Image (cartoon, rainbow, N blue to C red; front, side):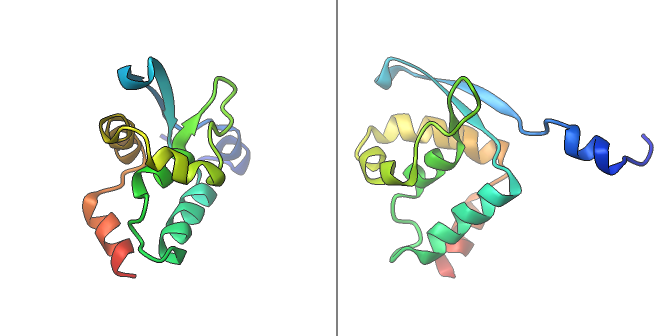
Length: 114
C-alpha cells in the first residue's frame, strides 16, 4: 500500500453498513458506522444529558440507523419514543452499531463518568 492522496481519502466511502433483522418491528434496519462528526455529536449528547447513559441505546440508534438513501432514519426528537421500544430490538441494533463504530462498554462507562 502506498501513500494516499487527499482526493483518494475524501472520495472513499469508508462507512461500513450492516442490515439487522428486527423481528419485533417486522423487518430490517440498516446500521451504519458514524462519521467523525456524528461520533463527536453523539458523545457530546451523552455528556450533556443529565445522566450520560440516559437513553443511550436510543441515542446510538439515532446516530447510526439509516434509510435506503443513506440518510438518518431518525432525528434527535425520536430518542424518547425509541427508548420506549423493545429493549431486545434496541440491543440487537446497538450491538451492531457498537461493533461497526468500535464502541466498547468501557468507552460508554468512561463517557458516563465525564
